[in-house]
Image (cartoon, rainbow, N blue to C red):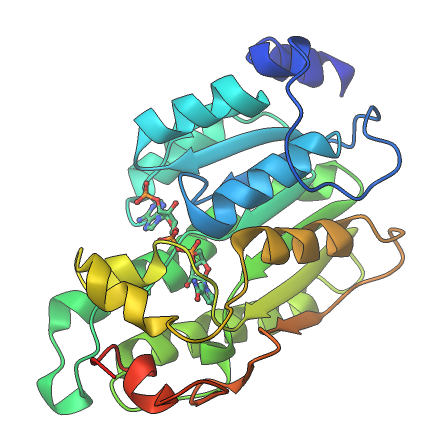
Amino acid sequence: MEELHDAILCYLPARAAGASPMNTRLPDESATRGVAVVTGASSGIGEATARVLAAAGFSVVAGARRKDRLDRLADEIGCLALALDVADHLSVESFCAEVPEVRVLVNNAGGAQGLDSVGDAADSDWMTMYESNVLGTVRMTRALLPKLEASGDGHIVIVTSIAGFEVYPGGGGYTAAKHAESAVARTLRMELLGMPIRVTDIAPGMVETEFSVVRFRGDAERARKVYEGMQPLEAADVADCVLWAITRPSHVNVDKIVVMPRQQAGARLVAAPHPRERQWGKAP
Ligand SMILES: NC(=O)c1ccc[n+]([C@@H]2O[C@H](COP(=O)([O-])OP(=O)(O)OC[C@H]3O[C@@H](n4cnc5c(N)ncnc54)[C@H](OP(=O)(O)O)[C@@H]3O)[C@@H](O)[C@H]2O)c1
């Protein structure tokens, strides 16, 4: 184990230089807590999770398609940055081959494409959402399961969404994918019973990240309106949930965390003017 940490730590200039990532709430930051793989670490919740875990003493391996962003993150927090497209099984294989040991896998990569009704559904959007949210989680989990088991104290975190148990008009593709991802989390929990691997499903409500910009295909103004008049979660709020779940004693399995802004009580219930229009990204 120590050899692996040495191997990974040789990629960690910022840690050696005393980088101080944000928002950790653990008392003991110096302990080495094992290797944590975070997918979708180039922005939003994944990036925040990589920061919080690195600050808490994990040896973080960060994956995403935008390697330039990962490299900047690695310089800042000290992590191993590896290109990863969870929708491509060859990319998943080569990523996982670079990671000889893993104690924590955070399946975070994913997102939404568009707000089309089922009647107007574009196959390509649905395929993209299934590939990243569902199959990406399955591919990463399958590839790293033997290493998680070998760690003797493995933990799989899956960042789903309240869309994993709610639906809304225009959200068919995303909610179907997140329902499926939640089903994978619950299934894994049963299938891994008796093995030294915990499974945690983290289901956030509205978090202001690049999520809506991606959903609206780069329309930043439309994305901004989604959160207008209310205070959404920040990515770091969700990262805190990940950290809390994976730092409980190893006999404790946090099965599911549902976390929303105080001003949100459901996918369609937001305490702000014209919440429905906002949720669908239309001008208030
Ligand atoms: N923001 C919200 O309101 C919210 C609420 C509930 C759940 N979630 C979930 O939280 C997760 C993170 O989303 P976010 O809010 O942080 O959005 P974000 O800022 O857009 O981040 C999405 C991340 O996923 C990565 N990603 C997407 N497709 C990928 C692929 N095929 N292979 C590898 N990485 C991929 C992106 O990296 P690259 O583009 O560089 O590959 C990016 O790092 C998603 O699963 C999302 O569904 C978000």
